[in-house]
Picture: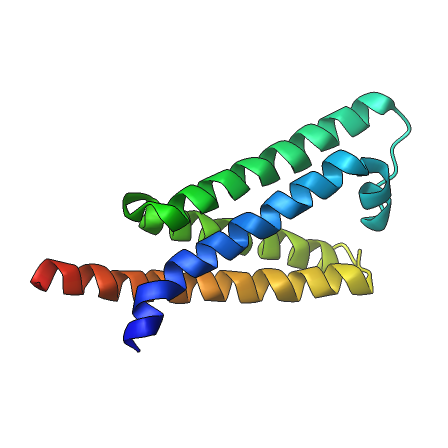
Length: 139
C-alpha cells in the first residue's frame, strides 16, 4: 500500500502526460489522417486550422501540465483534479453524442470506456494523494 501511495499519483500523471504528448505529436505529423480516423471531414482549410489549434494546443497543454504535476509535488493535486474533471467532461460529452444524438462508432465507444476509466483512475489518484498529504502533515 505504501508503494501505491508513494508512486501512483505521480506515475498516473506522467503516463497521462506522455499519452497526451504522443497524441499531440501524431496530430502535428499527420493531422488529416487522425481527423479522418475521428470521422472529421471539413470543407474549408480554416476549419482544419481551428481543429489543429484545439486538438494539438489543448492536448499539448494537458501533456505539459500533467508532466509538471507528476514531477512537482505542489502541482500534484491540481494535476489530478484537472485530469479527473477533463476526462469526466470528455466522457459526458461523448456519452451525450452517443445516447442522445445517436452518433457513434465502435472507436467512439472505445474512447468513452477509456475516458471513464481514466476519470476513475484520476479520482483514485486524488484519494491516494490526499492520504499521502495527510501522512506528511502528521509526520
